[in-house]
Image 1 (cartoon, chains in turn yellow, green):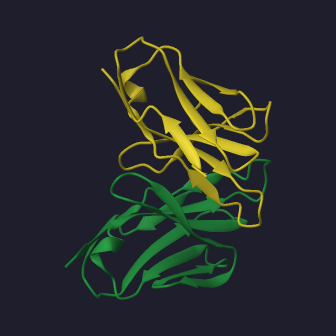
Image 2 (tube, chains in turn purple, brown):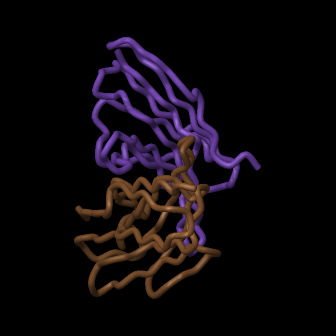
Length: 113
Length: 111
């Protein structure tokens, strides 16, 4: 099992460009999450999906859109990138077992110039 | 919104030392998670606690629900323990069982 995979690992964008970050999990989890991690701050939730076909805003959704394509895949789109979106982005999925443990992807380091 | 505070922000220790990282939160929770972020960036879960104490190898995590406080202890620390340790609390409500994260404690263990 690959767990949670993310692509790309690194990306540099110019202000105003768009891109989609891809995430997939092979653990048959219902819930999936997108976070951003900035220096000196904890992981912050951008969007989440409690199940296939549903998505909800998290703490910092402005400037982002998401798609839960199927149970495995949850993508994050930046329509018009801004320097404030320079960050490391993590996708995660969550088990339904009692631990509610989240499994994280390796992260995408995005720089917007 | 729950506020999660970790201390210290940075910690340097000599190999073999006993290490304690603290986490406090402001609002009642259903559970608390400790995670480890490796120097390469990968994040893995270490513990989930809703009460008492858990132990995995040299790592021990405790939680005091009344005091809204948790500690992560590392016994006989080793340079491979060098990482960022993150505390996260789980809201008791909401369908996605969202986590609120602390900003992390950077641990460096010197040989």
